[in-house]
Image (cartoon, rainbow over all chains, first blue to last red; front, side, top):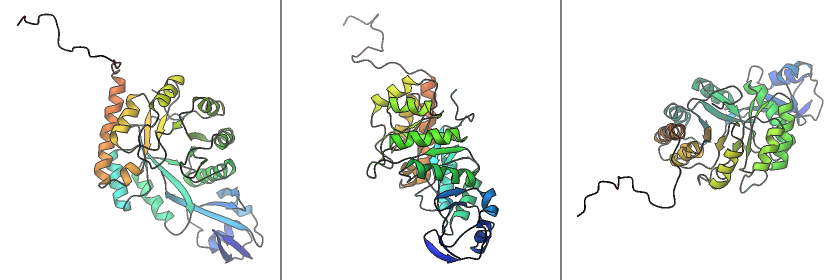
Length: 65
Length: 253
């Protein structure tokens, strides 16, 4: 299926958010996720199914004031 | 002593992690400042987040994630939820920005987000103005700490409205308050602590100084001086001169 990940298009198999993160290379990474603008907790990624056209945000720790 | 959701900060200095010339300078500045809290943000993972997190973990300080750049309560709430998942802390420096030029908080969005996040178990540090009425609403909404600005973020102007800040401090004597944003010089930080504020948060003043590590050290000294001065109960200012040398016993010449 086709996802929009951090603004870029990606093809993933899924079917869950946890699967997609592994495919995208973030399986072990410290990241936070939101699907179509809604927060998805780390613990819920395995039960969160994706569908074609979903918009995924994958955020990481970054410099801040 | 007023604490921050059960945590006593020693020294009461929070330092931002942005805009340093390099990660090495960031680490050296933290060591020189002795800061007890590091503020961080969340951004789209572009390959640098994991390395940055290692640097922050290595500092061994409390981590305070922010919602910088959020312009609505909804956006700030979602960012806070993601921050809690990522940083494993209930602390959140809540920014809901109302204007792009001044980065002034949107009081209505801030109140809405504070209420929602406090009800959800977050320990909210709302970035606010010196507005005393808004402060009362934020406390009522569940915030147990306030972060009034000194001046607009990154401006380096210091304490823009000392009267307003003094009034705010006096109005809520039991509430821990951090002067956040706008500090440009160590003297600004010293002044904030002398006035009875419990901590200061700064970033640009250190990160963008010609020598960030030396400036971090200068802020550490200022914070210590300001805190000691407040504890020592400063004299009240007077409009007129008052001789410090005794008048009695002066010679007739």
